[in-house]
Length: 70
Length: 306
Image 1 (cartoon, one colour):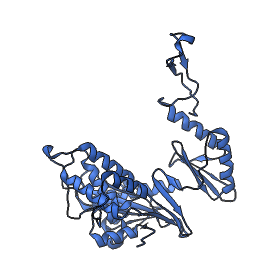
Image 2: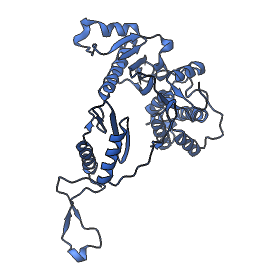
Image 3: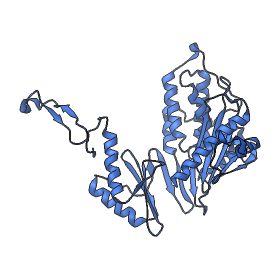
């Protein structure tokens, strides 16, 4: 299973064994990786975007209009 | 109602029976009735016990889901919502068996292939399963009288930051709350309005003209895109992926951040959330970390499901 995040620092913190007694995670099965903001599909859920970016993001979410495919 | 009562519950006689049975009598209930406190529980208990007797297991991730694996590796799944049941899976024989069993126990009706469920419309093709809430949107637009306006291209103006309205500016709270409620239900199939719906629902207590303006833009956006929905395709794998993101200190009232995640199973979007965090994050990394933790929980939950 994969979790993507566009912040390298957070991934570093999550991977850092020193902090693990306070921040635990199931590292055996979940893999965290960095993703550039451009392909970060969760972006549309945190900020309101201008038209073009918005449409691109919505298409990336696999949202669809069967009569007007993007 | 189908539930058996375990507790002693008495009711007073309905009008018309006093003369035959005497005024001082009460009835003891053997079975559950609508309106009893325990009626939903006993009803579901009875249903669950019937399904479980048929060899199904209740899912721990979602108590309303039951499943049964066969020896050949096939699966039959059943989910129930109050009195509506959806059955799916590749074990057709098992599904047919269970249907017969349920017909014997309860008064049920087979409505055939899934087409319409709680305002969601489903369609199938060779490509996959598509569902949207087109009718719900059109009803909402007719009800609000927004059928001839110009369509909006995005559901939210990127430059607008909302503040709580001052006391003397608050208008028509009930109307706002009703509209927000309808939009919240709509976001079941519309991740594109999830963010703005979470924004407008932060002002349920004090909506002003600016807030109505934002709702109006959402409605105009919906007018242009009533058929948008989600498509589930078979991409040949069932890998679980999650994307997490945060907007640091995006709220100008209390400087709290917004966390968001969306999860994909087999490349199909299944769950998503956009939510204002409930503590103030002092760095963007902290805000991101929180939303990543939320994404983690979601992934673990989905894993439990599977």
